[in-house]
Image (tube, rainbow, N blue to C red; front, top):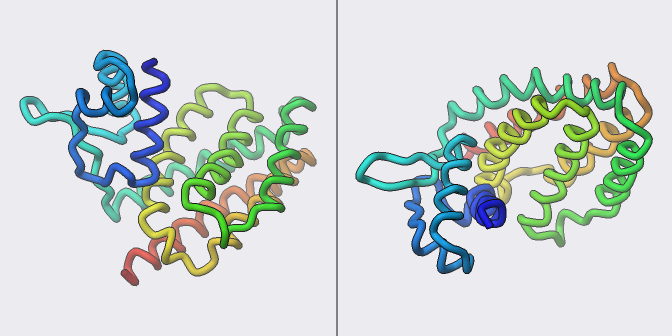
Length: 210
């Protein structure tokens, strides 16, 4: 039940259904999810480790705020780790992992950004990145990247409706995935780094244009 609570609360935080700075009350969340307060408290502790919530003594638990400086810090880390994961996945992915990535390629190619909801777009983006992380077969690298990808997703969600080329951002995943599937380490690393750089520039432009 703690895992269920964690996933539901995490998704609400990532899509900004729970806005930055909003309080989180374990009793209310427990009623909404139909679980006990203990699983919710356990979930909130995990989310605090993920830097998605923060708890203050005698004040309670709140969704962490999103600052412009966070974008630079997160992108700096992802620019190092995303190419590492992509190159490693290209090198070590099993045939089964490559088959799973091929299915994701088909999903991305068929995806219509204009008719999709925000949640659908974010979930597809997560499937791409997490598929590559899993294929890299390094659980410590995977854990770190999922955490930073979640933080980046919150920032992305803040400006999603103002991004000028959202379809391009989503569909550029195809070449990255194909490089990984084809075992081209250098190309996979190059495309992963370009994807992170492009993400930061697009989000920064949207933030300052707001």
